[in-house]
Length: 591
Image 1 (cartoon, rainbow, N blue to C red):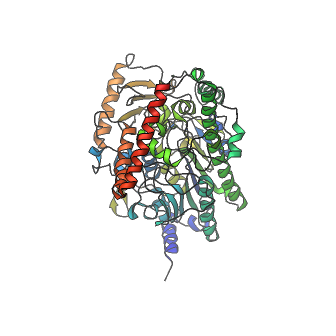
Image 2: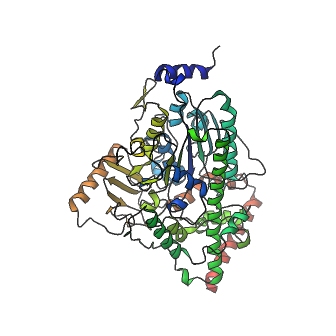
Image 3: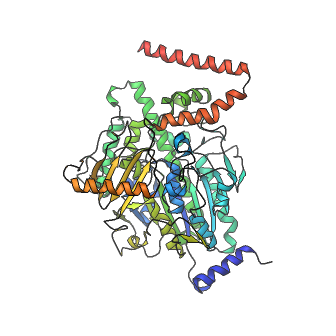
């Protein structure tokens, strides 16, 4: 019997001609997805964090200064892998933040549906090896895992995240850390650290198939810098003292470097987020604690970059680097949420983690950066993860290795996450489907290939009159030409529409609705049409993503465990809750 792989290769040759046999080798493709990195968290985008390997990719390739994703992880990942709007590919919202009113409605299954074809499927069917390691978060039932979505080999985390040092969940959203290898439940090694392990498995998969000479597609979904923010102590300590001046100083410094690098206009102004605390009002102990949180964050980012460097070194040693296209991006903006501020999650954290200053970043310790540092990480933009400001939607994008591209430059054209799949298919020489795949109707891709702008044959990815809509958890936006219509839920926004020119005003300071009333009205009509066509559902009155997360934790983990627990266990839990409530009230009385 002829092996299936060779049948695929033979069909590829029939489809693409003799170049499949005699022409240049098709490029390998590596997609590197950072988790919750703000716009200026990369050195080549203005950061003080050491990211030399990512910066090398930027120097050898292109930086996109106006690239947009969604404001939370799985909706972005669903579009990154399919090129299909998240409301049409099934991920209208994350399961963890989806209100009950939306459950089961079209586009709101919370997992990738079968009508959206992944880039992995298309590349695999064209003769590529396909691998994924790290975060998946697009389903964890047998039919929704990567091995059924085009990936030949996979070792993935199926939830929104997990601990970076151990095999355990990071929040009571899950009863265990859901890891799978090739569709089967899997366990982590004892010496596990997330970024290291994700690169180890990717290199293992790449090396295993190298002898056959076929190109590969490798997708690495890092957990850095998702909560819990954790990193090796020696890397964290490199940043000791670096953040002692506070978040406002850091936000300004990053804004100034972004200007110097040519990423944003020199006249760019910034909003001060209402959630940003007054650094000078903190006590010395509070400042030391807050600075350490950001030191851990920087250490986690640098460690991820080091591991990317190890992958690059491996590809160079095996002669594959010069024939590899790299794409680096973050799935959304910086994370503002402090889980200790969510009562149901705080209780669980107090029972399972420490947050002692001298242990932050280590095994058994939990920290995050909170809204003030998140605003600095998103500098010079407004907002952050979960909301529709540029700080939630605009992230770094670096592309390198595309043949005949014009390297070491900044592309300022508006770019969208749905443009990635058409780009990857273009560089691989694989025709993009247009709504039919292998004889059945599927969701058409909506993005455009970036190859023309990479090669310098055009300076725009999308026509000026093309409207590109966005909605997630009630925050919404519409992009058209240089303009953005946007509204965000409270407490970040006022739930009203605003209009900005995000080319000249990326900080979203000057609302243009009074100066441009016709554009303001017409773009609202464009958004209404986007919402109608894509089945966007209105959010329930009073919706809040943190409150919804508490309800999810109670429904899926806390209540089932209480029901299964013996009465003495319940009594102990009630005593713990009572003690925590008493301690909190006592602290308030002291203050």
